[in-house]
Length: 293
Image (tube, rainbow, N blue to C red; front, side, top):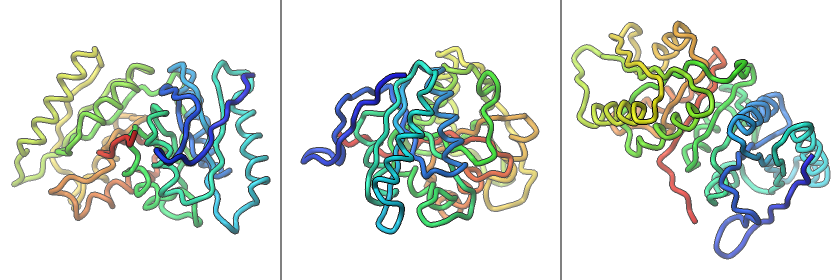
């Protein structure tokens, strides 16, 4: 087992000082629950597939466990994650708020992606449940894989990825995130859209679809374009998209965490429904946040 290396805290230039600026690392926030255990399992699978290393992060506040208790549990979890695997594992213990600490550390340029567990639409204070996890991942500039408590990593990795299209800005970020995952597991990507009667595709949406198709073709990624008429008459797209995911046997969904301008009034509810889906399909997210280095 490799010896963990140490990350220290605040400097005058960055919110966190990274001793080794290894951009091939995966950050995994943990709260010592089943959901974060699942995040660790998925993070390890991604690290082994991509020859990456992992950092476990626990954020505590006054009134939680003592720092020594947190350190003991975090060190034990880190050693367990490393045991018998050819990956480097370390951990960071920070006092603060998850809404600031997780985006702050992920913004240093030291991490390729983040893996987070979610407890669903309801949870305890400082646990990563529906509205809270969306609030956090909107501020994270690297791809985030959100894993539900009931999720299971498929044998051999992801095989079918549902990629609902959108008219988002910074759309290259979710395209690049899908390309990264496809480079690890070679899933078939379903480039998916729902046509609503009386609504035509806007120029930005057509541009993003074309950009995704061109990027996937250039990288040799297996994909198919799927267009469905609206079957579920609701304000948003989540329910029909999840119905299609179940029908297609999708084991991964990819979305932008930020809303589009035209769907701003219902987008967050839609995204929370997808992130906490009862199908327990992990969700790959990208935001328009930027790395602050």
